[in-house]
Image 1 (cartoon, rainbow, N blue to C red):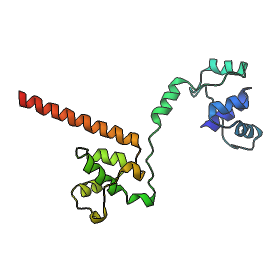
Image 2: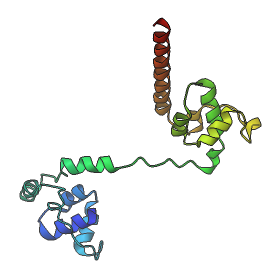
Image 3: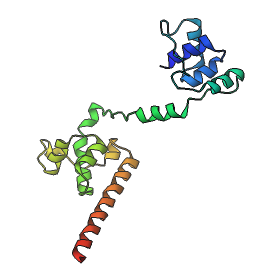
Image 4: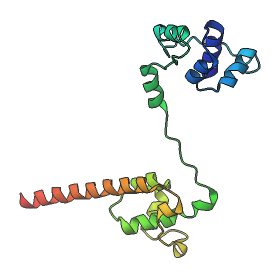
Length: 183
């Protein structure tokens, strides 16, 4: 509730619009609009000290010196970062038919990659992956293996990280089988 916090800071402190805007993640002109009563009409202010967003000492220091910016407390900052979920990627309609091509490329070049890894990398369903692996996909005659990075379905760094995981797991399995044979 950044606007509720901004309202409380405007009403109860002598902080500058820049300080309030920096703390609440708002533009100083938006903070000025709140102070003028043009923006956020009807929102009840929220005390950031009571909410644990900032300590009373830090707030007093910033009120006394306009050069000191308000900083959100470390506990709240960690909590906010831990609560942020990775949003699902949106694949445009025009690129959705490219996913089986990308699956075919991954299966061809990295046969040890799991279905879950492919699904996470390019965002497709397990049934699509299974049908491409088994060559029973409804459009199998038109599927041709193409690099998912060039298709825009994943980044090169994501692909590289996934390949490293696959190679590490393959080496671990090979090591286990060697140890069993020697024992």
